[in-house]
Image (cartoon, rainbow, N blue to C red; front, side, top):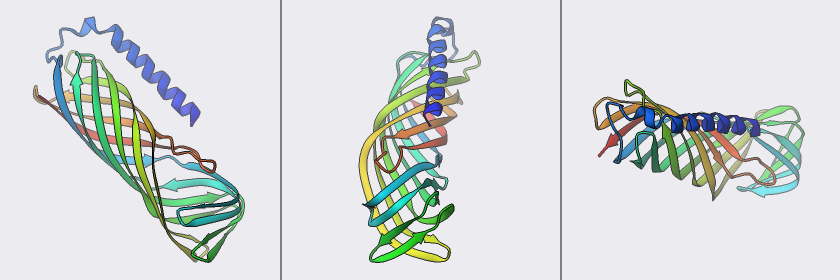
Length: 246
């Protein structure tokens, strides 16, 4: 995960510097964004990365108690990601914006590297080593971010851009049940919190009119949700976007 973040930061930094070096060269772009407010709508999918966990002893969370030594990776299904932003184009090459987004995805399974016992509501589920347990539940999150973008308008008005943002995420996880080997443990547990969030963004947009721009973007999302038993949650977000200048 750390190597992925370092690579993304390095790529973003190089493109950002390249944009800065070309500010003067791009002043003849046909459509100018200088001094323009805009609104943007985004919609697409979120692909969560696997999240490592490790439990030793007895830990209780979301109405679920894990006893013994249990470790592995939690896997989630592809979900949806929608959002909107209000931004200001400082000039042809730089923009700032405030963004709000909502994501939701379902839990899928968890690998188990070593054995342990899960308990909820007085019932137990013994999990075997080197197997997967099925998870029923979902994760939802509302994120508020402040983003800074560097843009490189090309001669045909096609505009690639990179950006980075910092903000907060309010998340909620619901665990309905856990199953293994035909045995199901009913959990009906819930947990929520608010944590620091950050993202790296790369995208492409094109004006269909002077006021409307369409495009697509990729976002690498990081949330500071790590605890003593699990690492931070990261995800890849792919979205189509529509920007309206005013």
